[in-house]
Image (tube, rainbow, N blue to C red):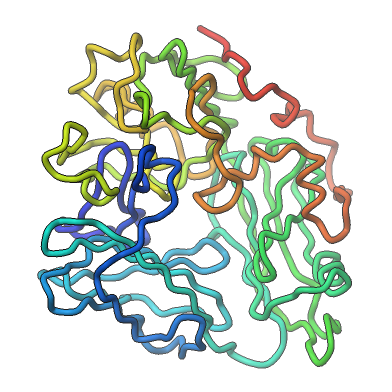
Length: 425
């Protein structure tokens, strides 16, 4: 997927681009932009696909705004497996078009951020399905093959909805996940009737191979719906990286395979913009973003407005929470929380952090006054559900262990108090 063009709009305590999308808003509007519901766009947004309708995956997705002075500032399109659609925003901001093909038999969510002629921001959300390549139920595993951190969940996107408990049990029993050389018992969680996430009871073992495959081909799932043949997925994990930020002491402790290798002074969200507590994982990395407060509902000219070039930005939520360089706040790092929700650090430390993390690595915040990270709607907050609640989301109601390798000795992060203080170097 392609990087965003330079004219895209982003923001500071939080916004911007994933390497796979045209732009992502940062903190949402309202008192605490990181916790508030999305604001409704006043701009007249038109789509080439009707909301909730079926789309031809061979045709591009187009988004436009009426010629009344409004403009598009960001567009994000994702499928049920968490994959992002690349696209291009026109120079005048009045239209956006996907530049990569949509997947067949997929469910898409499109989030469009806009700005009217007076600079007031807004957001519209569209959902649609693409027609399947052939009849039957198909499974697309995510993320893309590669090497990830030990916190990366496996996702499964279904081409047709599965609603009943009996049908879900059939599907789940045929979605197999294993890890070698160390086994990692875990289970699926039904996020909705077309999306499942899989994670073990503890983090994945470091330096492991993870295989996900479907054995649904020819299996009856529900009335007139049979499973099809689908492509398996293989991932690998790297070191066990955990970056733990204590918002009370303004220190980040960085661990590699359990060993503290660096402790860095940071600043987190100030009152009203408090950083989310909880376990997140790295979603994407961007060496430069232009962060602009108007994209998250902060009016230009207010005491909280900003328009800043930001370097070494590591994204941990899709609403725009980052770990990034904040040289303007170095005087407060280690002693006070002054950001708009991101974790800010010196340029040198942010560059080091950027170079030492990959998608799926653990980024945890404790002792903040902010809300808890939500599990599924803002990135991968899956680890914030304890094992009992996680199993409640399974149609089988139990963890399944693979038979390959020895049991994982990894510590279970779900057994730790949410506000446990991290170790210090």
